[in-house]
Length: 411
Image (cartoon, rainbow, N blue to C red; front, side, top):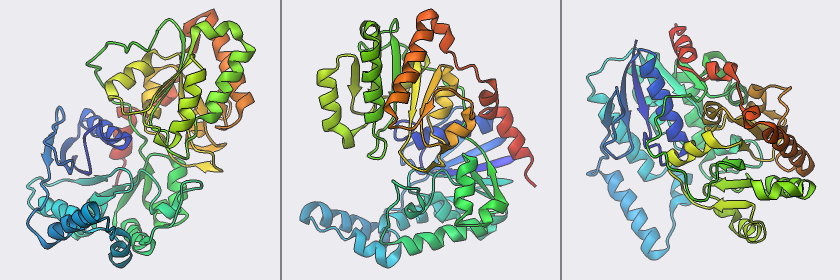
């Protein structure tokens, strides 16, 4: 089967979404499919074993001129017209120019695919918008939906109303109706989006974020990491809705209950956390057992630490439901260290780990978090090998073989 992948970005350092997209592309190649990638990274990035075409931005068009004029007015005169313009047109001039750039490149391709897979990141979905304008590809189109869209369809506490919500809603209704197939990283997300766009329940399938082969190039551990300690690692962005307060307070309670653990235990929070800076600064000042790096860290370093952690934390927002499959989930499964899941009762992470998985808690249940950490610490004291995750079922679910099976079953 020939597969054309149209993707926002293949730069694994720019977001967790791009990491997930690249892992999926690698596994499509490893599954034996003939793959070409058209990407809008605006950098000449190549992936091993696959032809990658960097889609150029159209720079001589009225839309390009309007988008740059808007930026100049915003930057130099503090005149932000984005809300007004998007309320009229639904999207920014930059979005329209970007999607036109993608359409133009796809029209010039010579590759004749059996399947066209659109991948995006964040709240963009530019490849999906571009495919809507290429009806000749709709019978081959698989629209991959990585997150709820539009934003007002996010579960609380994430959701808010955009001025262009009606246009974005119509856009995704068209995606649900025109794409022959749809794919979701989680079952809960398919069900969630299908409650708003029922056709996704008919066309949808589950393709989870992938475990792909990844060779760590820099294998030097940072100076703040001591591999001989009981290390609890959370690696990833801490958005406003993902407060680490419950985790930190649970960790502090564990230390108060187990004072002998202070000299050999470390909690490491690594990644952008600008929404929690003041709180984290206060915690770090008074708790030497906590290390916080508030900034971007290269994926090499993150994955190396995840593989050597005693416990990997997956922290999600306080909510009634979390339909997301966190992009870090496959990395944590691959690292093969026990996962401390801090998520709602109804969450994809908890569904996959299983109802009987012992190390799950709501993100703000301080007593339960302290109890989990205490039990894991005692297992580590007996033998660090006690903390291996050893979930072959999850490894298989995130594997090339499962992906190949799903794609081959398309009709």
